[in-house]
Amino acid sequence: MSADHSPRGGDWTRRPEGGGRFALWLISTIARRGGRAPARALLYPITLYFLLTRGPERRASRAYLDRVLGRPARLWDVARHIHTFASTILDRVFLLGGQRQRYDIRVEGLDVLEGHLARGTGALLFGAHLGSFDALRALAASRPDVQVRVVLDKRHNPAIVEVLDALNPELARRVIDAGQDGPAIVLAIREALEENALVAVLADRARPGEPVRHAPFLGGQAGFPTAPWAIAAVLGRPVVLAFGLFRGGNRYDLVFEAFEDAPAVPRAERARVLPTWIRRYAGRLQARVLDAPYNWFNFYDFWQDDDARSVANRTGPPQGDAHPRDAAGADPGGSGGATAARRPS
Image (spheres, rainbow, N blue to C red):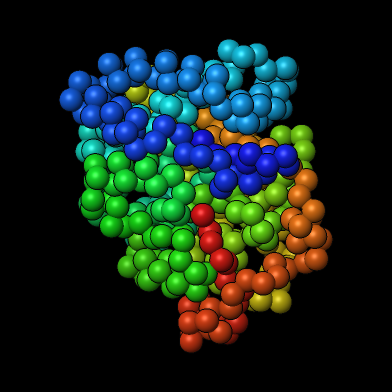
């Protein structure tokens, strides 16, 4: 879980990683050797441990649940929230370990993806820290004809990355590291799209200091990163929303929604267009969160009023983002000038 230990509670990158390497290795070993049932039994003491020891996450969970449930959240609600998160982490062991047959994964909107793949354009899949994106990677493992590349910052939660990457080295090799500089990320995404790949990006969480735009979300104004949308505007490829919702037991709903078809936007128009996309994304995300409230895994103050972000929100186009041509010697979008993002993670 990630949240800030500072008074403002907004810097999720500074929270310590939950569990550590030994704990993660232990539960993954029990899962692989003993099966899912005994491993799931361990989730109850794990949930209790985090409930008792991780105060910032517990408070952030309660504040979020107050909003989404429309009533004061009880301690039981917070425990259920943490347990749902732990369940999806455990299921990564099996989903990424090639045991998709254990799960009832129901897919909605697959025709949207197949249409883009048939045209050879690839697509950007924008999701959120909602449910499990690994259900999407499991789909890729079961469909060799579909190439999925996930944009992921490997430096955050390195213990989880180590353990899970060991389960499926092939999927690990397909990760686009969001820890690179902005132009390198954009070029890697462009190359993947030219190979007709699906490039998956989590578009709800900004790093401290990154440009954001505020949009209505669950009764307040929340800051969403501009980086993914700047990349979409530069590259001009289809954007599809993707959510892997955990429904309890062994069931996941994998949902794809059409969003924008090849949305190349001239640089001069982006200050007007990007906020519109972000508001639409926030609205669609809110609908999914209300449908699966315990699947929201941003354990920090998502609605915090950070002065620096407010300034970035008021002053128009994102400032300080790297221009791909300036840094990489060529415009990867072929648009004659574009603002690229620092880190679309």
